[in-house]
Length: 144
Figure (cartoon, one colour):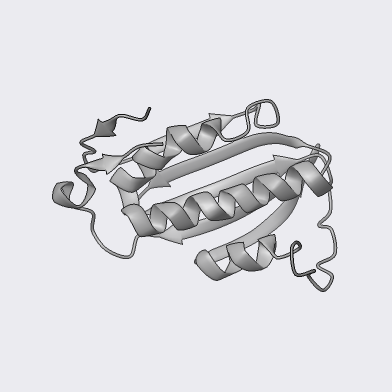
C-alpha cells in the first residue's frame, strides 16, 4: 500500500543509481514524488517515461545499464543513462509493439542526444520546467 504524501516543491535534487539492472522499477518509485515536487505531475511523468525508455534500451541493446543519473537544478531536469555499448543501435523502422523508445523520448524531451564514454555511451535528455510548481499543485499526490 502506498501512502499519500504532502509533497512540497523541491529546489534542487540529484539521484544516481549504479544497480538499475538488479532493481528495475525501484528508481521510478523513489523519483516520482521528488520529480512531481520539482516540475509537477505532467512533466514528471514525461521525465520518467524518457528515462524508462533509455533504461530499457540500455538493458536490451546496450549490454546493460551501468548508471542512471537524474538531476534537477536551475529549472530543468537532466536524465543520463550509461550503458556498455559505445554506439547507438540503428533506429530501424519500428515494429508496432516495439522500437519506438527513442522516438517517444524525443517527443517528450526538450533536447536529447548521446555521447561515447570510455566504458560505453551515455544517452541523455533535458527537460525544462514549463510552469512554476506551487505547493498546492503537489499536495495530496500519491507517491509510487
